Length: 131
Image 1: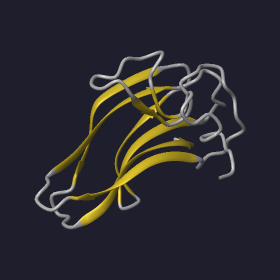
Image 2: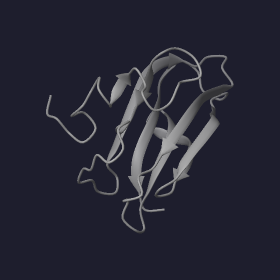
Image 3: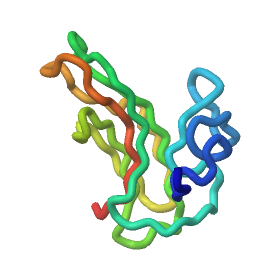
């Protein structure tokens, strides 16, 4: 696997890690899309993203939900923002923006999947966007 801005420190400050800066609401690990250590810089372009997904049977399910803590570095170029989204089958069902230098806790990012049935890929995506 080629190392990228999103995979160069897997297990240390990226991916599934034991958190150092924030305690997750349950469990002793959390999944970091980006990097937990402040000050790490990478060359990214709008549309670059990282996501974690899994196959889920949504038959009889009304809502898919996620809790997201979005910490955005202050050095994000003007006109860009980080977007956290809940994706189902590659489509964004819910999203929130994080502005440069701010932290945002979204405790209930939800997607209405009541019209879907069967197994779908469900995930959380972190993407650099031009809002």
